Image 1 (cartoon, rainbow, N blue to C red):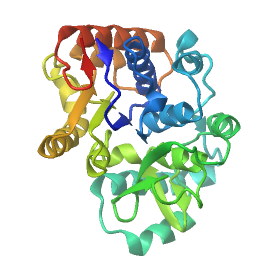
Image 2 (spheres, rainbow, N blue to C red):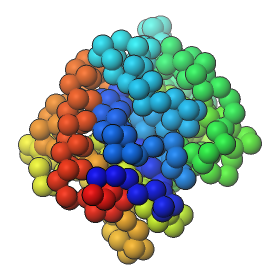
Image 3 (cartoon, helix red, strand yellow):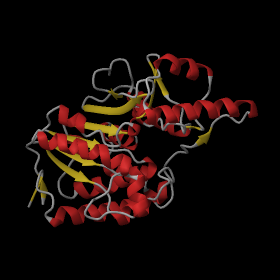
Image 4 (cartoon, one colour):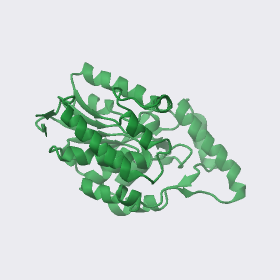
Length: 313
């Protein structure tokens, strides 16, 4: 099979933490063996972990570079990304309140415009800081938004609405800002502040956000969604429950694509790989196994004949 590149193509990279990054690398490494070149896509949309992967791709890092950085040696090339915040006992209670507010508001999506700025201007939030991870992003990516179309997805904390960085605000925000907003996991990291509003991880809105590419009328979409699962090879009951928040919006997005006659080539883990990914998606162990399994499953899927959209024999 080979990749057909005569259609306008969007590459959608979903959320999934450090484990999700390893999954992305495995799938992309397999796709490259079939002639797919991710940075040649007309648009790259990244959510959370996918925003990190997409940013590096748009800055001309190769998939092999990503492997060495995010997978090799079970993530030994990764900086420390969970740096405990605070430390002052007097800070612990206000930080807990602030973090609980951010986490609950990101899920409930209430109209919180009146008190979000007041609370987050007063209370600290986020149990951790990105720390060395933020420094590495700034060093590797710089400030300028890439010339090729690249969007990162976040969620406006006060309104619960989706917000896209890089679509029409490239002059007022850096690529690092766009990535940092997209990876601001509610309660774990503090929200990202931009133009006096607070933004959190785009995965709280949708772990895929594939419909953004549908709205732009791209002829084909290649989507990698680490937090969903292959319904023909479903995971255990508890993994299906845990992943239901990723599967439900993805189904709606796929229906939109079908209604617009847009072909979607979708990659998502099997039940076996879902179990290998586990629950703690921010861990840095066993990443080589996740990447290797993602590579093998993608090769198997591409050779199975199930994909008939942008790949052909």
